[in-house]
Every structure is written in structure tokens, then in C-alpha cells.
Amino acid sequence: MTAIEKHTINVTAIRSQFPILSRNINGKPLVYLDNGATTQKPQRVIDAITQYYANENANIHRGVHTLSQLGTDAYEATREKVRAFIGAKSTHEIIFTKGTTDSINLVAATFGRQNIQAGESILISAMEHHSNIVPWQMLCEEKGAKLNVIPINDKGEIIYSEYLKLLETKPKLLSVVYVSNALGTINPIKEMIADAHSFGVPVLVDGAQAIQHLAVDVQDLDADFFVFSGHKMYGPTGVGILFGKEVLLNAMPPYQGGGDMIKTVSFAKTEYNDLPFKFEAGTPNIEACICLGKAIDFLNEIGLEAIAEYEHSLLTYATEKLQNIEGIQFVGTATEKSSVISFNLEGIHPYDVGVILDKMGIAVRTGHHCTQPLMAFFQIPGTVRASFACYNKFEEVDKLVEGLTKVKKMFA
Ligand code: PLP
Image 1 (cartoon, rainbow, N blue to C red):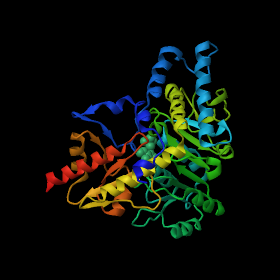
Image 2 (image 1 turned 45 degrees about the vertical axis):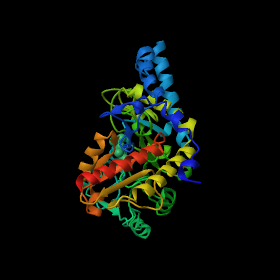
Image 3 (image 1 turned 90 degrees about the vertical axis):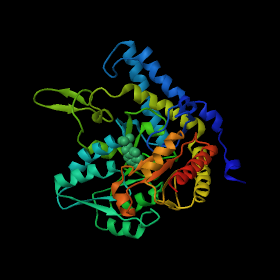
Image 4 (image 1 turned 90 degrees about the horizontal axis):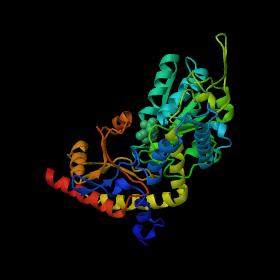
């Protein structure tokens, strides 16, 4: 059976839910292959934003009037939906943030400041996004601590023996990406967490590129913190999640001060609110939080197992087709990969490839993908990245191949 015949999901039905996918770009039907940066939004998410402002808008948690109650109920119902989606024990463990970056900064500024002292270390990997490097670097500078980096091999996989050696140095935290946005590598996260725990090291998992592709169960993984963004999982921008084990979140100081995160305030002393509100100061992005729930409904209806299987067929098909292009160099060839293909065409700058593909309606990402240290490891300025979502078609892979063939001809 070919990759095309094997898939189980109804891509036509899925695509019909995404109005943007039927538009033209530069006179050509849009081929959207920049899903690693952000996914498109299904109609139900778009409608829910309008519906919220047209019918339900009010501030939450503070009002006795009907609209405020409705908004609060919808907001808290979404928290429960997120809890169930990632298999957390309690809604106390689900904190609404602005996104992955915000979630990591929250942990760095609270757990990090509280637990990491001069001379101690934090462990990350060589394939981290800048948002899982810079907050730790800032913390290390502040505290006089050290940032250690797990090396990777030429395929873009963690060198596990080196990881185990670094664990022996007893870092105060391992903060590591589940799925690399630049390479597609799927790290053996469950095994990594188990090994970290055997050395008493807590683990933050950057799940920004995992949550929309793989079924996640934070209890099964035994993750201490798990973070992700709404906009990469068919939801709106401006909302993300920090999952943290309740015992850890309870022990952490608040991140920001303000309304909602307090129980009582006097000029002498403030008593902080219980979880999860302790970490949600001020008016949140209410409509985005509520609409994230609609994105979760979308994902649940198809099922993450079916999505993973379909996207894997797309990846296999695209890898087979692309490798026939002469002079293509793949960057990131891990055995376990998500639906991301990073590559360069010999002698052609990735930026030029991206600009010409855009003229054909094909949206890919070019550049360093916010992973400059990783690009330095591969000694390249950047790559062209095609990242697939569950609405992408095999024909779109063919269009990418045709487009790249034209690019090559233009530069020949
Ligand atoms: N981590 C990874 C692996 C990512 O791919 C991204 C975004 O591309 C981020 C973190 C940052 O996400 P956001 O910009 O939504 O905060």
C-alpha cells in the first residue's frame, strides 16, 4: 500500500473547515506549509471569537451579572477541557498564559529564581528554540549559575550517553523540547524524564511542536512542567498553557502581582490566591482562552492518533519525493521525526527559495527558525522548512517538489 492509500482521515472534510485554505496567493491556490510557525484556524474557532464579543463579552471572575457568569463558566470549562486533553490530574495544574514563551518565562522567574543558586546548573539541549534558551540564560546570569547543553549527533538526535553524563552533574532542572521545530526530531521524552527523575532532576517539556501532532498525557510522561501555545494547535494567538504538578506550583512564588491572583490585599500584606489563579494576574485573554477550547474540540474529533498516522504518511511521502531533487541537503534526519522537513538546495540561499516559492503560492519558512545555536552546529545560516498539518494534501507535496524544481532551473 502506498503512503497515499494508507491514510485514514478525511482531508477534504477537514480542509472545508478552514476558509483560508481556499484562497489564492499571488494568483495561485495557497499551499500552506508553515504550520510549525502557526497553524490556520477552523471556522468554529473564528466564529467563536465573533460569538464571544457579539454575545458574551464581560470580564470574568468578578461580576455577579449574567454575562460575567457566562464568561467565567466558559473560561473555566476550557480549563477543564485542557486538563482532560493533556491528562492532568486537576484544573489547579492548568495555568493560562500568553503562549509557550510566556510559560517558560513564568517558570524561570518563579521556580527558577527560587531553586537555582550560584554555582548550580540548568540543562537544556542543543536543539532548543530561543524561547527555551534565553530565559534560562538570563536566570543563570542573574544567579551566577551555569547553562549546560546536551549535544546532538549529525542526524539531529540527542546523544543519550552524553545526556546521562550531564545528569550526573545534578542540574536543578532539565528544560527540553519534545519535538524540534527546526528539525522535526521527536525526543525520547518519557525515557528522558524517567532518567532525569532517577537523578532527582525535575523536567520542563517544551511541547509547542508536540501538542498538535502527538497524543500527550502528562501523567504518563510524568512531566513536572509541560508548556505549549494555542496558535500552533489550530487555536488563536495570545493564549498558551503552563501545566505544572500541583505540588510544584504550590511551592512557587507568584509570577506577576495584580487582580485575580490575590485573596486579600492590605497595605501591610497580601495573601495570594489558590491555584490556578495565583499565576493569572490581571484580565486574561478571555476570548482566546475560550476559543482554544474549540481548537481542542477540533483535534479531539479527528483524534491525535489518526492525525499522527496521517502526518507520518505525509512526511514519508514528502521525504521520498524531495530526495529525488538533485543537490537537496536535508537538515535533521532523526529516526523518530514529526512532520517537519528542513533542507537546503545546494548553492541557493534559503531566503531566495522561500521568496520564489511564495510567488507560486507556496508558504514555507526560511531562516534560522529561532534556533541559531542549532544552525551554528550544522554550520549553515538557515534552512527552508516545510512543516505539515493534518489538512495538508499529498498533492501539496507534489506542488512543493514542482516549485523547488523550478527554483533550481532559475538558478542553474
Ligand atoms: N518552542 C518551540 C519548539 C517552538 O516551535 C516555538 C515557536 O515556534 C516556541 C517554543 C515559542 O512559541 P511562542 O512563540 O508561541 O511562544
